[in-house]
Amino acid sequence: MTADRQPLIECEHCASIYRRHRLEPGETANCARCGAILWRYSGLTLSNWLALAIAALIVFGVANAYPVASMAVQGMTQQASLLDAISITWRQRHEVVAVMTGLAGFALPLLQLTVLLWVLGPLSRGSEPVAFRAAMRLLGVLRPWCMIPVFLLGVLVAVVKLAGMAAVSPGIGLGAFGLLTILLTMLGRLSPHVIWRYAETMEVVPVHVPRAKPDEVLTGCHVCGQVQALPRDAEEAEHHCVRCDALVHYRKPDHLARTWALLLAAVVFYIPANVLPVMKVSSVLGDSAHTILGGVVELWEMGSWDIALIVFIASVAVPLTKLLALILLLLTEQWRSTTNLRPRTRLYQMVEFIGQWSMLDVFVVILLAALADFQGLMEISAGAGAAAFGVVVILTMLSAMSFDLRRSWDLEGQSEIESAPVEGRRQPAPGAGQEMG
View (tube, rainbow, N blue to C red):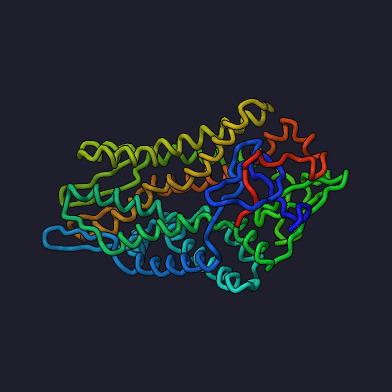
């Protein structure tokens, strides 16, 4: 492929445009401007990815068919799977918590694996899948909301919490969820952008290399990554991607207003999430209620300081860090600051990475409710704080998705980059890599 036909790629964080080159084993292409990773070398073929997706689907079935743990109290034994925990939570009339955990832990991961199999099967044979564009748009929506690793950590925390009250033993489902977490982490690198690059390399889809005219600017599609030329005055206008037909904006419209609105809503829900109990316990010894911090203190007093630290970080430190980090990013954007752009980019990447881990306590509560479901002896149920906390997680994730970091980089000489032709744009740093294999 000649140099002028090599596909273009946009850095999602600073909007710099590069030509995609072939990478050698072990190489990673980084943005020369903000330092973000653009793409990595992968030695896996589409057939390898297909095998991983099939294995993940099989393990997913095993993980949900068998209990993750069992609990024995006074001769009675209670086993619980993820589906049991969701069902019991619904039965206890905590529908909001049941729906959130059911979607994040079961329905959306299953749909994600189904979509991957739908597209990887035909692509591995060299043909374009049916409804390929719609499937890729759906995959892009699903990926941030699949929280199997968070549920796995929630199982471990729940087992430690109950170990001091009764005999608790792990089940087959726990090992299956551990293996599923590994497989999904590997498949996590197979983003819609990467799948489209495989399709280009195999010539299943055409390569479109735009050339911006003087009155046009280049920008990338957030779904498939296709770089395309848009009119210079298209900042707020809607256009459709030339490849996948998704809506394309040069920059996210009204990103500050949207981000502030979602963030302030998260702050409002953050108060009841920490004040109201996330878990209620009813037993022959009486009733009690536990807040998030109360649960951390209880674990610490039980001697499980390591688990207490994990819960404190995931359920207290992470949500607060996300809120403060987003507020800082919004204020620096409104103040039109161009200082410390690289550290601010790292901060935004951190907010995106830790987004889903705050759901830990919600998963812990529903699993405790399933394991300690001994009518007349002990019963654990979710509290109002669990629903509020889940809403905080969702709102902070949506807030981070609404923020457009590229606008901060626009203030730092972006107009000069946009006005140059493709050949004059920033190119990868020496050794930054050449097109993925």
